Image 1 (cartoon, rainbow, N blue to C red):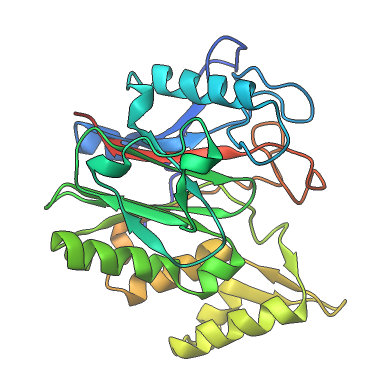
Image 2 (image 1 turned 180 degrees about the vertical axis):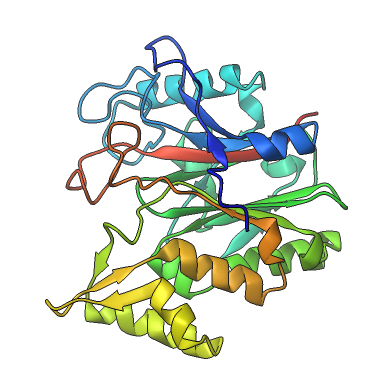
Length: 288
């Protein structure tokens, strides 16, 4: 695993006129034509408390402002707005294959989004996959051998349901991807420093760790008990364990050091901001 921060922000400060985007710069440099990254909270037109680059149509923001923000991101990435595909996320482990028939779904209305899915895969160029976040974990996948990409939204429910494995398995069965060749990245999300959970969530996490026969050392990197009866949880570390169990090499997994709760100057955080906040998107696609 590479310990350097994989998500690279622009050197310049955010401005109102354009989206402030963090790119998976190493991937984009290594694989020409690939575009992948994560948005910030800046560079859009949304007002408070969604200021300014809110990409979520479901948070009571002005829908026209959200669509404008999404259009700005497409323009910044120099891709047609019609290429960007969204889902109605439900904290599941269900993943959809996206082809030309679903290209652009949900980009300007929830009703046209891919329903009840939390992940996408595609091997078609010119399709950009998008998932939405305000603390949950974005999981990125790229198979350079078959030029296939995947993207998954992993909250605690999707994580313990192993959406990482669901995405990898779908890439394997649909495109012939070999896990040992897949590159993976874990994006900005709430870190173990800030993510306190109760015993109900912790019990599901311990069950997931037991299912993979994790060592005590591995368990400690994922979850630690606190004197108040709560637990501090690293969804990033748990998703990494699932990726490795699925056959992705540890050297092919890059993990962010950016916590959305610590960095509300840069990101939206549902937990830190009491639920009244916007949504970032993760994106990945291959340029046509």
